[in-house]
Amino acid sequence: MNETVPGRNLLRSTGAVFLGIFVVFVLSLGTDQVLHVLKIYPPWNEAMWDNRLNALALSYRIVYGVVGGFVTAKCAPRNPLRHALIMGWIGFGLSVAGAIGGIVMKMGPAWYPIVLALTALPCAWAGGRLGSKRSN
Image 1 (cartoon, one colour):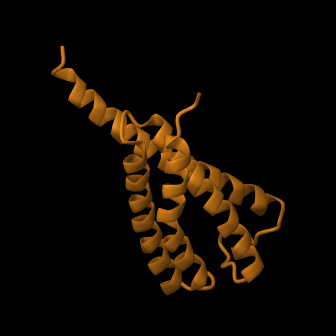
Image 2 (tube, rainbow, N blue to C red):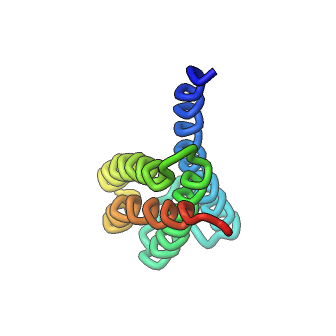
């Protein structure tokens, strides 16, 4: 009976990490869509050069990164902070790829995707720390 536990834990670990990433994507893109519909953001096919709008996007993405780390930690079968940091490293890699593409394609100011990449790990760590705390 114990032979199935490692496979089950690997599946739960992978699921926890990808659930955290999914939560960050859904919350981020959902908020983006609402702001596009409200015409606060320019249409999707236009670059967003306004530093205030980019700062707004960064602010909620930071919060959502913490939420993703929290969800990952809460769903992890063990070592919740390690799982959240794995999610953070994946987010960092995706953010670096997005930064390179965004800068090359001139989709907005370069500082925004760079700071987004630099905040991926600290946000995941903060969420992982919050998610690691035991509830009494």
